[in-house]
Image (cartoon, rainbow, N blue to C red; front, side, top):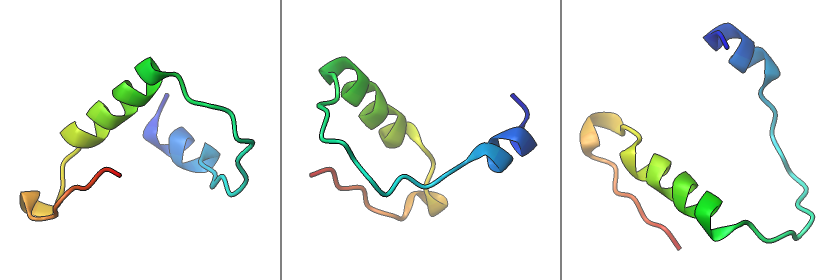
Length: 48
């Protein structure tokens, strides 16, 4: 998928249905966030 397509199809989810997230999927999401670049690595990361 091209970057321009990703931008056009993005949306903001403001309603959650309360379903649980599988631990494997949650671990993958957290790992992606951990590996994501920050502004010159100066921004701290905190997971609650």
